[in-house]
Length: 116
Length: 113
Image (tube, rainbow over all chains, first blue to last red; front, side, top):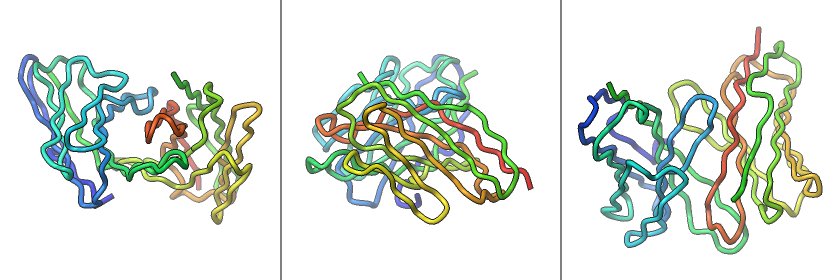
């Protein structure tokens, strides 16, 4: 979805380096998410944020940190990258759920990260 | 927490045939079930979703069915075309978890011309 952008699209880094992945959205959504995708494992939630002052850990947050700089921006950092963090990373956004169940999540194009 | 199982992991069909992908979920409180299609080099895109107050939903060649008692839901694609080739993900969510989606492991669908 062109309304959700991620930078960089591809990144190669070395073990121990700090790296930041950035996500921006123009959909005006309050909620933003970071997922990691590995072959055969689907998408696993790393962190999520329901508004600018809200940060929550997901299923696999160890080794990652996030920053919600504004409603439209949500960054994921790997403080000291390791090879098993090699994966495809997706940012997603959604609108506020108003008691009627889940709302659609809109995904960015992904960042392919290789840690050597 | 919620656990979503998806089968098969790969599916190969001939163009024009139907394809069915099945998912089971563990949390009976889940009430929203989206399906995403991921094409090569792109992020997942929603193709259809269903809420627990209905049993079936159709959109042209795709349909989703939900069996709340058995806690499973399925994606049906009829008259498959080569452009249907992609990875498909099911997911489940519930009210008191906000928008938290738990995803299945994905199905790689290949439609042979």
